[in-house]
Image 1: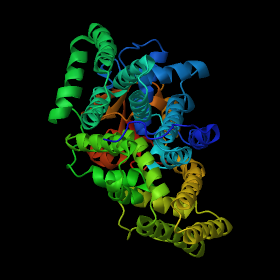
Image 2: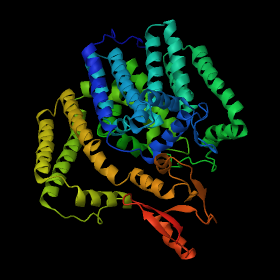
Image 3: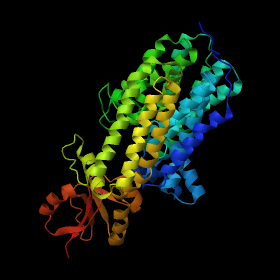
Image 4: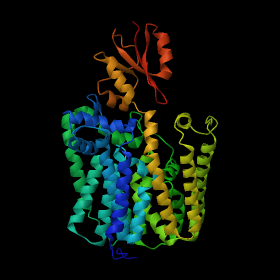
Length: 534
């Protein structure tokens, strides 16, 4: 049986901090370029309510609707908002930025302690430039904070396997408890299941089960006790649905039902462009005898299989396995030679395809996207951006040359995994700077609900406001006033009704005494405000 101490665990401070500093710039750069999306506002509205004196133990969309998540993320948003003096896009996104940078640091640290300083640094660069990780690292979403605590738990457990320090037992238990307070039972089940499997294969590792079981349960139990006292039957029903109901696929909650194989394409999209190398890394790793490699493989496989068995699935749920995947990919790049050819050629093809797209855009001022195999929303956005915001010919030409230069650099270093990975990291970093920066600002002009909400405030004043169907959280956030959901005529003479444009024609035919007062100038599915005709 191999030893649990694979190397001397030496750390290089410059290589350790490099990826985290790069991630701090990339993630921070992105938080200033757009208003809150619908999903971000879903997490922002409870923070607004807490900021105004609402119940800090029970995150709420409104007094009648509890948010179906524990409070830790909302507490972090509340803290940063108090430091900033108000709730804003930036204050809500700062916790994700810090958690993302922290996860990059922990990934780098783990790679260094398990393998070498160079592998650790490369692992940090890989995870920082995974597409979904870079996106969620700059958005007000729960997933990144959850991933940080899961990664911290695994790092503490790995360090504990090398050196049984009492403080590491407490750190591992505390990290798992904080993960539970961020997103619920998965924060407890996932790391415990993975470490149980690892300890069965490597029996020399004595797992501190008492700390890993008792401390998270005590932390979660404290919140559940306070929640039951404050929320009563509504809170207990929400907890039941989020645990038993989510596992059983209850129709009472929206669980995003997907087939069991759903996560296979999701991990390829989420970890792009590095996911192209992941199957080769897993295949090449069959001959590795390293215990650290097995530790990462068990953690990655456990989460992937565990989540695949659940009826409800979303690509963001895979985020906690990215750190382990990044370390495994870094090891692969440092050791493999022959297995790099196929995925490297695919990346080169993507670079050349992007060069072709940029060159094509420079030469054709008009293009119809209706024939492309995209969903209707993506076709609408692509057509709009191409028609109204196509960059200058010079900028497109520079981008074309840049893509070709990156592709040529891969050709020059086709037999060096470390150099190939460095080129891909630089290419991805520059792409994200543009997409998450200027491009995000342009897209925001056509998707944000802020301008419509501001206009709506001026018209509605003190009149009762209704929404036909479920209220969008981003509209609720920017309107910052009560909206009542309805599926019928409010039957109030001065009432105003918000409705999607696609539904308004049928409504107006049925209610001839009403008319459209204002309409959104943006969004794929624009809203209209309907009221009584004077």
